[in-house]
Figure (cartoon, rainbow, N blue to C red):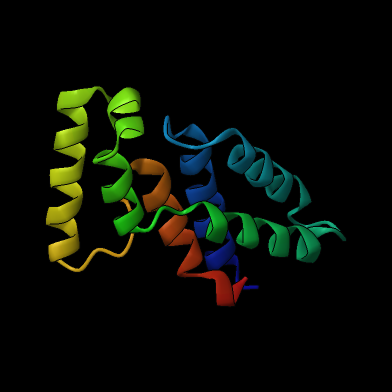
Amino acid sequence: MKKDVLDFVVAKTHELIDSPTCSQETKEAANAWLNAVDTENEAEETKKYIAELEEDIMPIDTLIGFAESEAGAQVFGTDKAKDVAAHAKEIKSNGAKYCDCPACAAVAAILEKKDQL
């Protein structure tokens, strides 16, 4: 793996971990991967990490559906849920495939490099 790709993914992984929207299981996978970098376990942990990221990134239609649901209103609050849904619809109309919260944005950037890891 090229050092510049590794450095990029390490930096994005730290952004992901620091994101308020990052789930606990994703943080655990991210930390496990970081701890495995430059060890004999790196390849195995990279596979696990990529699988976790692909599972956890939120497709834009899922975000819209959640934001428009009762559960979304409970999580975000009624007014904020409407704002989230409107924002998601707007970015979808501009071509977004995934949520653009800080965690999903970091995951998307990492996944763009997955074939180089």
